[in-house]
Image (cartoon, rainbow over all chains, first blue to last red; front, top):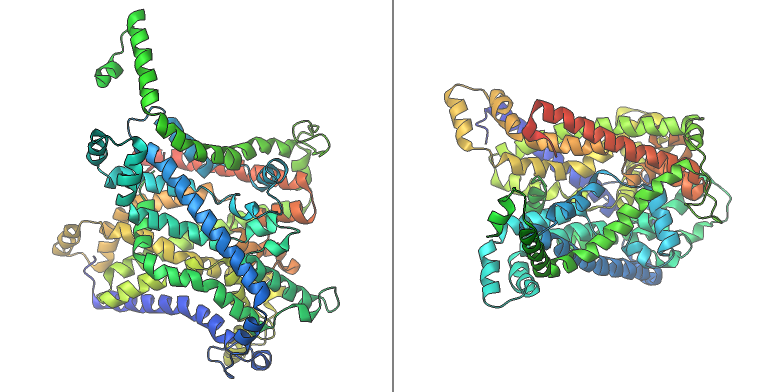
Length: 293
Length: 325
């Protein structure tokens, strides 16, 4: 903590207040426009305070909930399956690496580390998934590629296991007759709730916000789109309509501006609701992640 | 017992070799459950990361799907000469590197200043509250952010053209048609979505700096700036170097969403928004041009690899402890 003079303290306070506003205002604009009537949006444009307050967008969403609920449902499915599988894989990979006496530990660490520096790129990855694993146009295309195991999170969890779960506790459990698996399930996992929460939140963010897998792998099965791809699709159609007066997309296919903003608001809600509960762990996790692998 | 076995460097008699081997076998059996635990992750890394690496050879081939990847004919460097035969590839490479350099410089400076500010503000409430709020943009997907950017920049209804520019008496701007503005817009959007995360990272290093160093500096008559210069920044050195090295390794990569979705893939903006990632995607999925896009992907991987090793070697020459590996 710097012992600062008055000028510095004024500057730092002002800076933080400015940045807090800079983070909130754009987000507020999104929310405000979802509560503005469509006619007012078209006439007066987006504004911070709705000139004509209206719940029309949300009513429209409620009446047309079919396709949105469907996309929402797929997003939840991808997030639940993806996060569960990711956390299990991460624990299973991190725990052996945290055992300093494991033969071959250096090799397995290297296998994990190389992908952080070097990868085959989009084309070979795309070909592997479409030609060998055939995940194209299936729900697996949203779950398996890229997101199932993040080496960075594995290293974070390994560091936590090494630093926060004393070896003596594991040894004691083994003396009491526990097998390695039992020690992991009954001792190590209950002691590692903060890191598991962190990894879950990080993974939840990447699955919930993932839309690139959708445009790579769900090229014809757009009915499997999650909410992010749904939004992306709507945005693209609207942009297309603006630049091409005639085309095979009619304006009727696209929700109006305020409705689109309302969908975007709804898409953000789950993470915003989860965030305060995880916030404490999240900051801790960022800190842990900075520990040299 | 095992320790002494390990340390023994002298030649072993056959009998001892035998014993050592059986000990190794016993250890492997003892650790067997661990290898089973590692297996699913290893399989995934093999499929998701290592198998595609062998696919880097595609960059030197002309892919014929009827023959398969490995039987397709070699074409030497022709994919690369084709990649650089027109301006698209060079332009994408240039944009990627320039944007990343800007991101590294501005992103780190902003994050460090914010971390110091978080450390200095007297109000506990402001410190806690801003820590929560600055991470909110990090929760949003680039699709959502593209909606927000559109709310600001829409030519007809956007907040900029309707509410901000009229105050200064400036005419409406067709943002999505004018490439000149986009280096600034993209940089601002990048800083907006990423500064919170990096600030918290730096802040967590900052709070671990020994308080007595500041007290000693004050006794020696150090001003606030001198405290920052001589205590805070040296304390952050390791984190700064780690983050910059990792960023250098990714200097040929770009956030696909940031460059694809935020500019709404407006063709008029390609000159300043096309990066290697969007170029590869467009060549692959929109033009089905495997050759050029795999050549670009190859350059991306190799350049990143070379750069991070060069940078790491340089750092370790200067200060061994700061190097990444």
